[in-house]
View 1 (cartoon, rainbow, N blue to C red):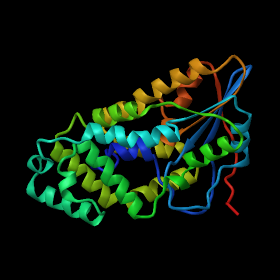
View 2: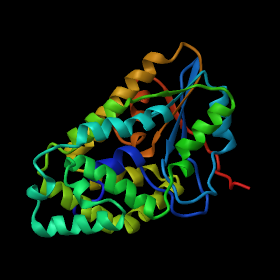
View 3: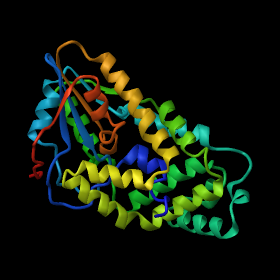
View 4: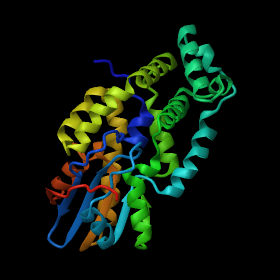
Length: 295
């Protein structure tokens, strides 16, 4: 199978998997237990076009009872990231059009024009920034909104109960991830992967959503890794999981409860957060909570 659509680093790093199907099933909430402390790990989706999925009462209670709450990135840092990415990704030369085949540039220009972005602006962007911007605009055009995602709900509930949110990454970390994920391919190959992802995303994201809504973390993980190159897996998942694991482990106290919410794909696999904490000595269990519908 072609490794195009999820090779879009922006989808893999920023949005994780998108909520498309209304019926609530099972929440990807886990516990990592030690004798005197508990770490809650919630696998999330960051952007949605549905407004009727909500955090379970168990997840909300875990947030309130936790000493510290982590997300991949705080709201303030996410806002700052746009400026950081654009400062790094705009260039005077070479023009992107000069690095692409004529047909590839024509298709990209047509897509960006439909999304309300002038091709002359895209022409000055590094391919990784084109990936970022086009993906974001395409999802917004389909009605997707980060305010409907699970991460936003975690933030809102934590703030409501006076819990500070801490970030596992800064804007500069995200910049480095997006740049490194594009190093292995030439501009033509990367833009072709982006165009493939825009064409195929609705069907493939629906498939991913079924796994997420059913709480099927193993199938979700298999689908992610099937669609990413080994290099992208290492940059987007393995290295970041290791950094986040060390950061959380070093910040937790000897006792009490703690809460981490990250994209669901970061929990699974031999190098996922669940396995990393289990090897450190924690007992991992699934919190069998049911998502409920917003009134």
